[in-house]
Image (cartoon, rainbow, N blue to C red; front, side):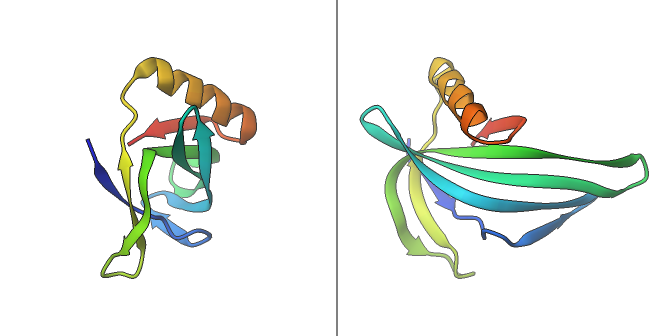
Length: 109
């Protein structure tokens, strides 16, 4: 099952309801015979009435099928990815990413 993934703007701060978040880097990771894309970012909660905080996170769009195949109307690259649905595979990827990056959450698209 192929999906389009619109690449995030690295280093650009995105406002959210109680703070902001930033994507710091995207990583192409060799995984067996395939390649995985994941993006690392951080969120800061600093405009909430309930306090402040933050966390590091990673988002895994999936296996790369076609890298930066086209450009969106907003000027952002679009790749084709295959979502990673197998939970055993997801757990291996989570373990790797949490060992390699400073993140508390890993989400799969």
